[in-house]
Image 1 (cartoon, helix red, strand yellow):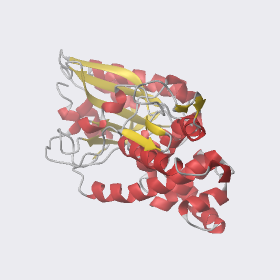
Image 2: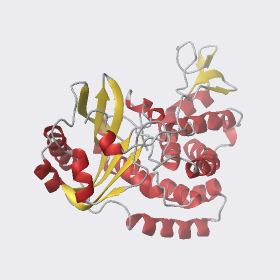
Image 3: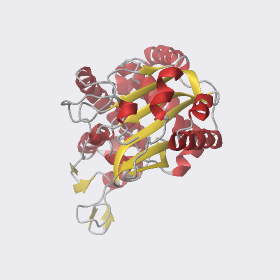
Length: 341
C-alpha cells in the first residue's frame, strides 16, 4: 500500500480547518495556557506565593472538561477552543457563590460546546467526503476504564453524531460523567423532567447503534494484531476471517488528500482494498498504538503520519474501519492526550 490510496479512494479539494492549536487562555489570574501554566512554564499562576484558587480548580478539572467538550464535538481543536471560552467565564466568577465547582465548570463547558457544535454541524455540511472524529493518542491505561474508553472510541463518537445537539449533551453528561439531572437541566436550559425524557430517548437511540457485546482490551488487541499481520502480509483469506460480512470502511481526507467520497460496504468490497502483494512500500511503516482508548494502527510514510486506522469490533469481527487521512486531524496522534471522567 504505497500511499493508502487503495483504501481511501481518490479526491482532492479544499475544506474547512477542523483542527489546530488552541492558543492561550486568558483570565483574571493572569495569562495561562490551556494546561494552566504560565507562558514562561513555571506552573499554576500564583500571587505572592499563593496559588490562585480559580486557576488551581480549572487545572484540576482540565482533563475532565476537555473530555466533555471532545465527546460533544469529536474535534480536539474545537474542544481546546471551548476550554479557552470556559476559562474566560470561570476566571470572572465569585468562587464563594459556587456550591459544586466541578459541576459548575462542566455546565459552562457544555454550554460553550453546544454553541460550537451547531457551528461545527454547518461546517460538516460542506465537508468533502465522510467526516470522522479527530483521533487522539491516549494512554494505554485508558482501556482499563471500559466506560471511558467506550465513550471516546471512534465508533461511539460516530454514534453520537446521529444525536441532536441537546440529546448528545444529555447523554454524555448523564451516561459518561454521571451528572445529576438538575445540573444537566441548567447546562442545556431544560427542566429536569424534560432532561429525563431526553436521556431516555438518547439511551435507546445509542443502544440500538453502539457495538454489540462488550469486547475486552485483550480481545481487541488480539483482533488488531491478527488484522495487522493479515494486512502486512497481504493474506486475503486471513482478512476474510476477521471482517464481518457487512463491514463498512470510511475514509476521511477532508478534500486535502485522497479519500473515498462515500462508505465502502461489504466484505467483498473492503477486503481487496486491504490485501495483496506489494501493498506496503519500503518507506511505509504500520504500527499499533492506543487511539481513543482502543488499539488502532498508525501508518507512517517516510517518517510522517499518513493514516490512522481505527476499528469497530462486534462479536469478535471487524464491522467498521475508520481511516483518518486529513492532515489537519493528525496532530493529536503525535503526542498523548489525557482524557478523564
